Image 1 (cartoon, rainbow, N blue to C red):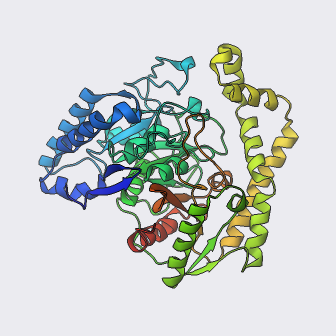
Image 2: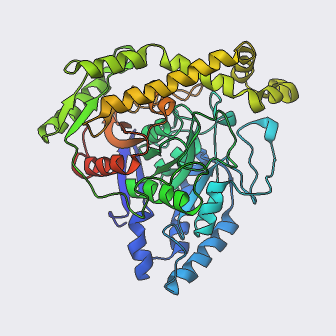
Image 3: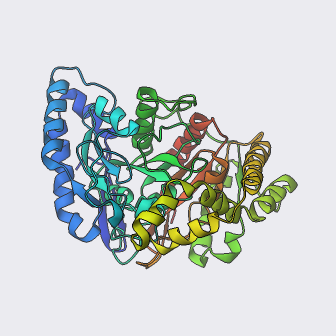
Length: 463
């Protein structure tokens, strides 16, 4: 295999080939590879791994082959539709698809068939992307767990709720898949499965046709084999479909912005550093920070900078709990109706949250909204003069578990504030992948991508 198109990793005894669409494009344009051939490679990998990984709810193989054949004809004519023409992609099963059921990971919606595509799916189809299937999610993207397994060690969780999307990419079944994040559901599974995760600024990518949880926290995100893959897909969706009420993705283009070395990064420890981070993960992350410093990047943290310390204390002062409170209030539609209609088909945690939501007042909700806005402003003030926050994506590699999808401690902050974040597969701990999280200012996704690009070009391979 061409190493420019495939990334080989060995974790937990499993060798995984990560297949990139973006890196295959030059061959597609030169006629050395066709979209149908690229799809068949994905289908071979699916045939080899799906029985143990369980990344898909449903596959659409014949329709995918027809779409790949149409893309092949366009490339041969020298007229691809877009930068994503011929790209095999998975769609999280809370996103409407007109030709495949959307079952929300819940028995309450078993067999439910939408009439129209979600806006993000429509944008991909218009660009010639090849929809391979629907990927597994936890129930309504806020449930406890599901059947999907980590492709690097099937005894471990892949993370959630975008479990199938991350596992499919991590197993080399797909170069890219769509996910959503309401607390940690793009970045955490990407980190656990050795993939790239991108959660843009809140609202930048369209959520129409994606089953809602909460207006202030729901983000459309992308999980992919490379930084180029996630940026290409996010950019295409933003430039093709857009998101009503929001400007397009900052820096949107076929490729991420040119690599730019950060001069100053703010390291965030957060309360999870003492409470949850495992010793091996601490060691690996400290080694990573040391390499940043040796590269000439200034690293400031709560120990060296008073403002950073104040910002961390503010975030640790109950904002995880406030985020959960805010989302609980906003879930009243449609989940109160689900409780009445479906009863015990809804997970207990969902029923309990609706019981709590019934006790919350509009005035209390307004105070939560004000706190969210204040924390975003605090983040921007703290970031002034720096190129981003740098921290772990999760407190450790994917836990050995089938009853939960891992800690959300490190992902929830950027989600709560609606600011952009990447999970970059830069660490290996206990022979399992783990992500480094890069967080930036709202609306400055392109600048953050330029920093991420530099990190990936210069700091890979730390164990």
